[in-house]
Image 1 (cartoon, helix red, strand yellow):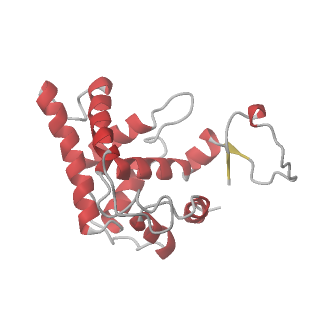
Image 2 (tube, rainbow, N blue to C red):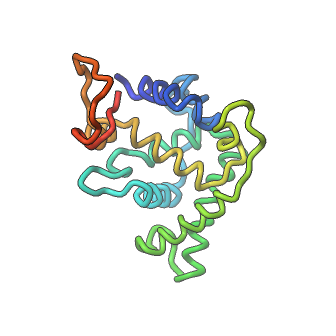
Length: 196
């Protein structure tokens, strides 16, 4: 299964609980090579550092190992509208500003403890956000064009990671053809969720 097919399946499984931009990207297809202007190298380093804090390398590969920063760049550049892109890029700048105010060092060079503190602050600000009223779907108010930076970051990191080959084959248990249906399977036997 190709990544785009896996992304579409993931969107279906989430019941459409993804941002409009991510949904557009999944349903519209590839905009083609050369369609986007890459993000500046310093922004990409910050995205990589933030992604690594959300899903770090442990006994399984982390977000950077799964090329999540490149996935994020593609969505932000090709599929975010101007408001979403501004919120995301301003959020990256805010992480840098937070670290410079605390220790006179940028986010990338701040070290894990200060990076975690900067992201925790962004998460606290995002949790206070109340979007427009739900349009009949419980997740409809979670993702809109004005959703805060941290919510956007987390959505992209998690979606990018778990739909990558690394996430599907090394983090999740991968069984392309189970050959049987067991409706009462004990999760404790495998310890991981299944990918498709």
